[in-house]
Image (tube, rainbow, N blue to C red):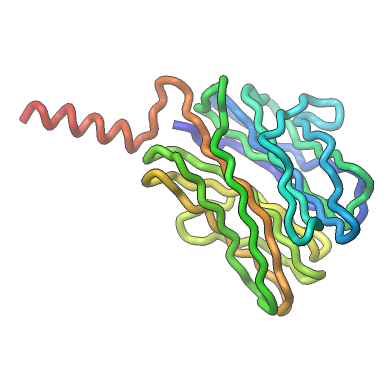
Length: 245
């Protein structure tokens, strides 16, 4: 089945025109990368994402999955990207967007054991808003899963000058995250499905009580041929052994 390999994320300084994460090194075979860019631009509209690459500003373009998602009255924007055949040597994620948004972030996570023709599918978007809190839970539910299948998601959290960190919710693994400037942060998550749907969750934390909002997108990670999810393999083995008492 698909397995997490490596990843990186970075929130950038106020009014950055583009940005590059720190380096990370994927491994394994049948590799794929899931990347995202989030921006916050209060008025008049969110900054449109131009492109995302691995290997710096002159690196390899990563295909966008679906279309960018906006929330918070159009102030927040999240675009996700996926590409098979990601590198096995040191790399990074570069994000480029229009103008100079109030805050921005980019990142990516790499996996091995992934279908090279269709690495990701089943995009689902979600958003939430709560008032006067120091912590809230962001959640997105991905459907159409097979038991044992790995699922990934990205969350962009927004809070006025007090955002401090993302922390794990039991059952979901927080892979990489970054917060800068107290306004915007980005987090990448994974979780193994135990049925046809799976909910990925993460805590968004602040240093003081304030309104918090978030946007999220999740996808299924499709296994490479011959690498069925472990749960499915175990179920098939039990059925086979059951035929020979």
